Length: 210
Image 1: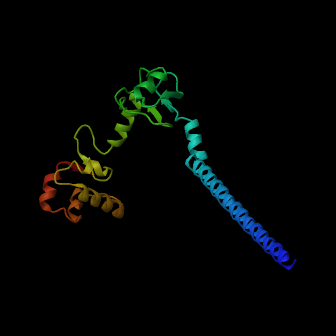
Image 2: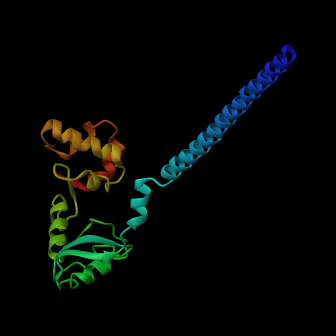
Image 3: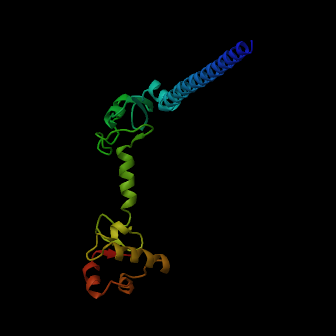
């Protein structure tokens, strides 16, 4: 009887040990499955994030809205129909003028570079011949048509630079001198300006007046 009890006890311990090992195996397998599942989920989330980053809203919007092929220019002055006109990109000035009905008879046809490429928002102003003639008259007030002499008190720097031996530096000195002194009272005063000696004065004395 005692031997029988020993056998029962032995088999009971063996069975309990088997159950414990089986439980451990099942737990380990379950944890491994979770780990694999979590790894796959993490990889899936990373793939979604990468896809969202690669296709930003700005890029999508840019692809959805192609660059416009038109520009708008304002044509005014001596044209038949002044106004704002829509033109294809890379259009030229002459095309903008044509869109405005062309030039009037009194327009200056050579003032603008009609082959110039236009940009969006540009203004194309066509002046009249009379307007340009008036500007030339104003800029030439210091030079009388009968003698062609340059007036030291009214000449621009550019006009002074047309005199013999007078460059940009000397022309600026002449303008500065007359502003400080209130003007020249005689052509001989020109020799008082630094850099203008007797030799230079002799070259220009017949080309100037006050």
